[in-house]
Length: 297
Image (cartoon, rainbow, N blue to C red; front, top):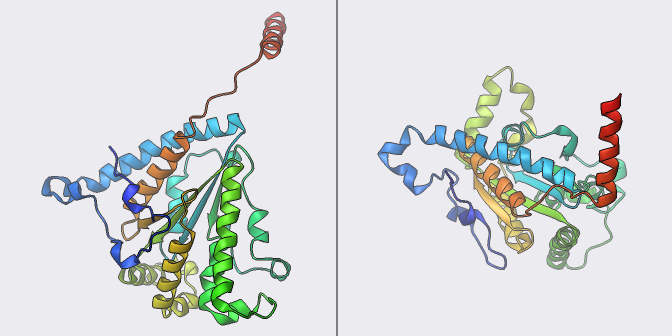
């Protein structure tokens, strides 16, 4: 079974509006009455199927030692970034996978350019790196909140429009450089509605086990919903490229989001057509000798 993911790609060079993407999306066939009761279970089954694929593909990625994978997760507060990592990547060998959650920049990080701390966390060959938030925050929160921008202590800006255009360009050029060097860049925007976010924030407040995840800044950010939506739209339009496109993932139903993301990751890594390393003649002879030594022991 496949849900299909092509419709969620932001086409390079085209302008999209988030309102044209349904955050509560379901596949057309799922709207038929006979499927409604089983859709969630089918999505869960698909997620498990793709997780198993990912486990085997990750082993090939590690063994081939030629490619790396960078997964970027962005979205409004409570969009489901943490649960996506937990559900989609469960079962993956932790030795070959690293999750980096980018918080408020430290004093040291603010003394460098905005990409510095992210470049340090990029995955090595054979590994999967997951960015829970990323350098894209520097064209989102930094753009929406002037007080955050001021902390970067940049030289005087003569043309603000040009400044942001150049920052988008810096990001796309970095990603092109990574792709050319063998890093597969997968970018997911978890598209949640304002109504669903309210529901999830209230759930955090009402559940003692989840209350720690709530911050008063969540409400401050929510009050700027329209500004963030505009910033996200511009980010998606300016930085979705042929080499590293954005996927707008409907996130009101977490299980749909998990199934879609798992399908993209599994199918994209499969396209690399990886194989286990082939031993040369000398290596085969050494293994034969080693086997003989072990059998004599």
